[in-house]
Amino acid sequence: MKRLMHFAMSLLIIALPSSSFSAGGGGEPIVIVADTRWTSGISHWWATLYNESHLYFTIVTCIIIPVVGVIFGVITDFIMAHIGIDLTKRGHGGH
Image 1 (cartoon, one colour):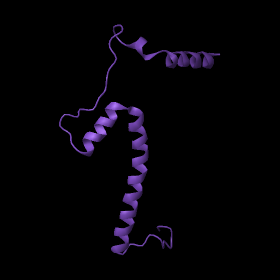
Image 2 (image 1 turned 90 degrees about the horizontal axis):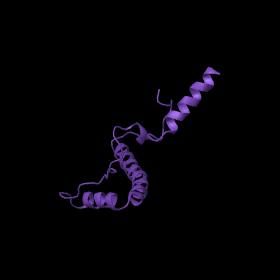
Image 3 (image 1 turned 180 degrees about the horizontal axis):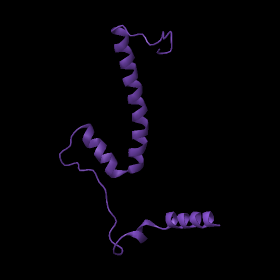
Image 4 (image 1 turned 90 degrees about the vertical axis):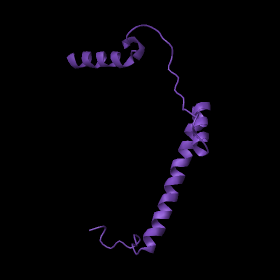
């Protein structure tokens, strides 16, 4: 029974809105924006995209990260093959 009460209290604390724990009442919501005053090029585009639509920013980020990872991987494989490191023929599994 004691375990059930602890669980219920924990669930109640988690379920309460976080604003009920803050000092004072109400207040204005915080607006988070990227500063684009001194940016240019891709940095300016990226910050503007963040400011205009968080959904588009998220979609573009989720597309760009794997693409950049694949590009870096291919470049690294190319460089390692040219300096003599061949990772395709691992005889002892790294031992």
